[in-house]
Amino acid sequence: MKRSIRPALLVLVLVLAACQPRAVANDPVVASVRANDVAAVAAFVADGGDVNLTDREGNPLLYLATGPQGGPEVAAALIAAGARLEIASANGRRPLENAVGWCDVDMVQLLLFAGADPMPLADGRAEDVACKAPADRRATVLAMIASAIGAKIN
Image (tube, rainbow, N blue to C red):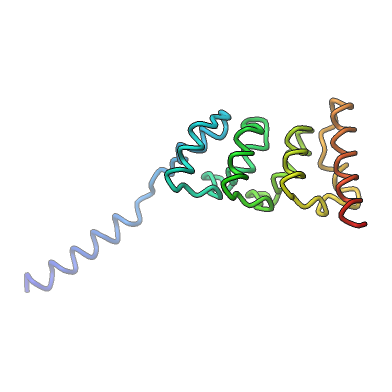
């Protein structure tokens, strides 16, 4: 009788252990991307890291690099390593939309040059997504998107 109880007890313990909540920590590369630490990101890539990794909120590394933290240096390193330009964040926004939203002229230029598709920003969507200020950066970013859309159509 003892033999039949032990396997059942072991299974119960394993099931209960699997059900325990575990803290989900962000991969250290997420902090490196946010800090625009190109050397750390390059080391991550050299070690075979997944450049399309997402943080615990579901935001891809390239998306994080195109926001208020990160920067064009890290974004360029991720793109060079094969990061998908059209990968969406947890809220469905792509890196180009994120860069437009922050009116980051350098980042928008980098993403467009790398081949990011501007078409999802057509039909007035760019105006809805773009930052409201500063006006000069907003105008520059919207002109860049309009030009890229025009080039795609023609």
